[in-house]
Amino acid sequence: MIKDRKDYLRRVDEAADYIRAQLGEFGIPEVLVVLGSGLGPLADFCERFKAISYKDIPNFPVSTAPGHEGLLIAGTLSGSKVFMMKGRFHYYEGYEMEEVTFYVRVMGRLGVKTILLTNAAGGIDDKTEPPYFVAIEDHLSFGCESVLRGPNIDEFGTRFPDQCFVYDKEYLDILTDCARDLNIPLRRGIYAYSKGPQYETPAEIRALKLLGASCVGMSTVPEAIAASHMGMKVVCFSCVTNMAAGLSGNKLTEEEVLINAGKASSESCDLAKEFISRITTDKGE
Picture: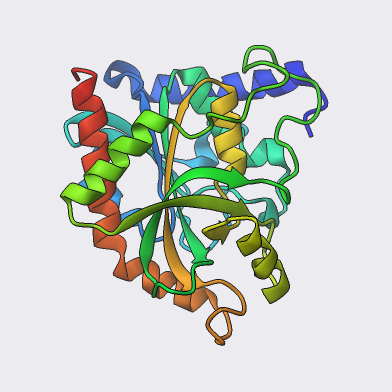
């Protein structure tokens, strides 16, 4: 929880100023892509201008999750300037929510307008074999400590933000069109947040299914709330890498998640590239 709003804003702006100075004449991209499991290779398609280690950015957390490299990349993808986050921060790593969402606040202060969030998730639909994709149209955040708890920072957004439009409807349609045109199976659904790091119990999954959840994971929701709070357009897709607890009869393992994320990596990258191309072309970039 943020206790000193002035100090938190100061630390966010210090990080933003450092990144701005590192980019110089390249300027500040208006699009940020957060690379979830399996999407790391997308960075290889990016014509890099600068790669900045999280360790070098003032006040930035350091990602400790497996497969999260810890790099902020600025470059050109699909002909447009983008930021890419290779590695995010999770509550289960021991970070507080203001640290989990710190990078979102920094990006907002830099002027980023759009954030594409990606993740690996457990599937709650037991009729489909992983891996497959879900475009997130809403979320369940019951298990998520509010990222807005504590004194509101007016420079970020309003005290009581509406949650009806966290995920941009226009961008959701564009993402759906991209998947259709690329012949990538994609459905729309609801993402349920879990604190982790333990997987959910079968009873919890049964409850989430009754509530309408399509998939479940340990990221994304805090970031989406923070980005929406700052007026950023949010779009998200999950790669369902395993069936959620109790649905397959198998023991859940991190290895299965990484293997299936790798299997879907090519389609994940194609979908993200096409989406970036379309939203930036529409803006005349």
